[in-house]
Length: 347
Figure 1 (spheres, rainbow, N blue to C red):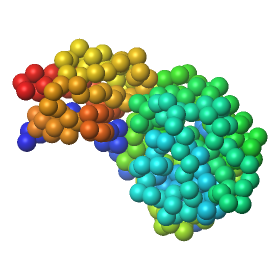
Figure 2: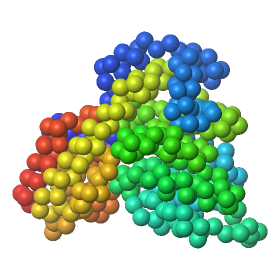
Figure 3: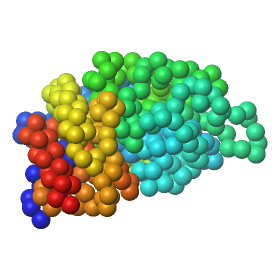
Figure 4: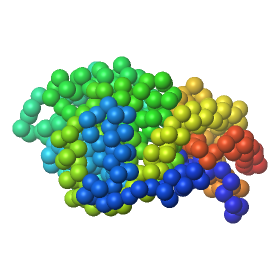
């Protein structure tokens, strides 16, 4: 196998930049669990303001943010409404059931999104024979929806409908800052109607780990209890938090470069025989395409391109994902397009 030259598998594959590593090496640290790490405290305060919430807690991962939020908002046996392709449905190892004890009630939306009318149709009156509906969760941007960006109006309408029915709201904001950069709408405005929200630092922002979960003061206090309960204390975690602060200073605006390269990749893929894609659907840094070439499936293509140095992500029998990030430059996009075209043409 040739050395990996372009990694489009996920934006989680980013490496800390030399400047980020320098910030980490010089970080002032303390015992985060005791509230004594000044770098973590600074990151939490900054992100609470960024997301428009009173408080925030630094956690090891975005998945932990989701799991803790479900556990704080709900009690075992209660129900969470979400889109059918949401991360909490298919990519958290059954955590909602195992940890929070909740049922997930999926809504079949479009590109990972549903509207207020669809939510309304899934709401039900309190019925002792049915799980009590407690929470509505959304994902911004949508992963399996191809990086689609919810509009502010759609998010507000969903939140208003949920709150009117007495339900809480949660936003999985793994790529929320991608949405903000792509749309010009601030993260706080997107999250305005949501009782909890989180952002990830280990994807497009390029940090080696960590995520921030924000909400009301009472919510965050209970989130800290759950952090300890499931083993999420990190102690001198200012070393990683310093990378997150560096990312906020240097890696947010540059997400626009990832989006431009994703559009360029999509436009190039549209001209490759055997590939089906609508470039107009690419709104952020996720590019999904279908294989229509005879005899090809996603796993075969991914194996063939990896053998010559380009890594892609199979996301179904014929569906492939490519994700742009700070370690993929223009030359990398050109190489990926050339490799995909040559592999399919050679067959």
